[in-house]
Length: 471
Image (cartoon, rainbow, N blue to C red; front, side, top):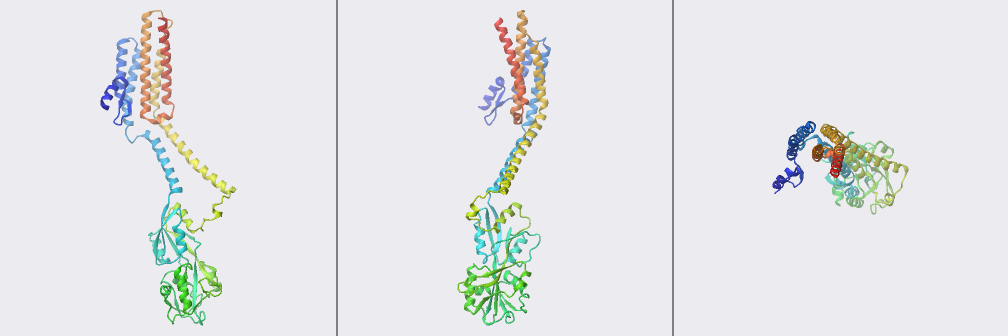
């Protein structure tokens, strides 16, 4: 049915119906109309060489337009560049806004499956980040996974040498040095056998570094802390227990009660000022009866710093979001309060200015591409303007009022009608260009042709109307 409608419209209106049901101008019908007008001028006005020449030039313009439009209908052409640029720019800004303000990032975090319970709860509850925890035996394994690229972030206890190329940030959650000594023994001369946590992990690593500072002489190390944490007291030959643990961990509480019942006392690490040699130590105090009945009085101890370490190659945006992992909980009245300041206002205005600047630059680039497209189409429209100018001269030289000869007046009326038909064809051709290249809608090149054609046709109709009144 669409094909039949197209065949009916084409000879009369110069239109065609596409497969999608859209009516568009048919270049073949325009060519047939231009040919008919040329033949009519040659047959009815054989002596009017100027009008016939304009009709032939119009026919040539229509034929060239057919080939030009066929090239425009291909997928990859320059006239698609402004629209493609605008689409890509808007999509890029939209994606940037989505990933910056709405997207929830997913990061893998290696941390021990038995320590840092408070930190784990904080990380999992972060609204801007989705943390996928990867359980490890300790900080050493976490660091190995990070360097191998198996995880994005790692929870590493102080005391481990961190490669300088890895970015790190200290977290607020810390673990404490817990030193238990059997009652009646003196530190360090009576201590020959110590119990610590897993071999090569955090507690053992710290013990090896502070062993000489504590003036221990080659003590025997046993890695049976996990048994004590299960409620099993150490052997009678064990003199002391040295671990670095999260005091909030339930296993730490169980181990403390087990050691207290086995005759061990929680004492201060015998480091003194030597603790300043280690950058991962901070002084801390264990309050009295913090672990139920232990200790009886406050004990000075050491807090071991912990770090969030990022793998090499993590993007700046993810690094910025991961930085929130080391911040304190912001669910407070102070965090919800609005406290405007000059600095905050300046930063907000700078952000708005930068965003508006991006949009303005996109708009200027889009307009620049449209300008280039208009320059590419300057020649076809200049050709149409030249034809309109020649037709304007023809109609200005064809008078109707001061002519008494009826035959000449009829001849001039026919010439003006032919000129009006040529102007209508030229205006239709300009619309054809604009229809096929939407970029031309954003400039006045095509509008100029239409305005000139309409003004001349109105002038011609007035001349003909005045002549009819006289007759």
